[in-house]
Length: 437
Ligand code: ADP
Image (cartoon, rainbow, N blue to C red):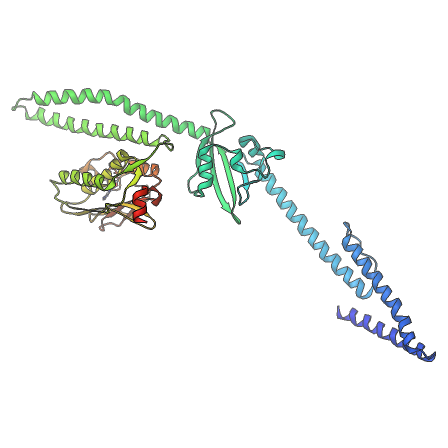
């Protein structure tokens, strides 16, 4: 760069000297300098015009012919332009390949801007969601997908769980929506056809519900006869008495199992539109506490209750009673005699909590992730002594999902357990929310 610049400068100085000397021999050195400077400036202007023209032209493949400093400038600009073009072409290819691959996906992929307007979608977006390129680009997504469940989900900005709803376009088709936030508030929505899985799940739920329901009648008959036989037993028939008692125990266990299965089936059916009512949890917990004391004769646990009487939440009282009772009954069942069990109802800035803490044998942490699965037992040996249907914590989990709450479990072997039902603060009923906020 400096070499060309030096040559250009030297040429200019020589030109000035020639002009000055020529002018001086004629007695007008200034005019001599002016005579050589003006063409030089004109030449510079012509080169500048060539440069401007070349920069403004769409086709920059051939820069104007030039040498020296100007040639160098043109060459540099030409090289930079070439690199820039090849980068653009690479990016363009990447975009085309990304579009081709997303178009090959069977799932609808949709991008919306931070304001929730449609920016881009793949071919499956047309098929599954009916988006039209000409009319729908730039439209608010919630104008096009109008199911209130989708609008609630989209606007909640809480996308931890996917949403499953029927398709508005095709009867009998179910779509699962999963939203991911990226960039500066843009959202990527993936919608997939889950009709087959949905139907299978529906069949499973119906089957369990029907079988449980059908088992009720024979069970009632068996229990009825057992009670009659037990009532009419003679004292000199100890063997028969033992047998009938065992049969009665198992019939009661089966009844509990059937009832739990029916409750779970009811909880699994989507009742997101169900209206929640204010529940006086402190009184509910007092009733559960009294029931627990009544069950506590044989083990003589030390059970205590700590409640904040100002906290009521919106919910389904029967479901909450069932969930809280399951946790308390578990604490009574799975801890050695004389353990300390505490029931708590309190809040903090992150939510409202119903907690059952015990200082029993605890649960190995490796079991915790699977504890709410149906029929999962952390300790088979302990379980065989205590009975139980294996559905208690599954019921707790489903009840809490209904209440937009979650179950948190902390435990170590030998350190006892803490089961916490964590409700969002928005579940607090208005009067108490004001007084506790
Ligand atoms: P179950 O009907 O067997 O009680 P649950 O779903 O209520 O079924 O509980 C699942 C398993 O979790 C139990 O079998 C038991 O091993 C373990 N568990 C639950 N609560 C406690 C507790 N407080 N202490 C120790 N283990 C517990």
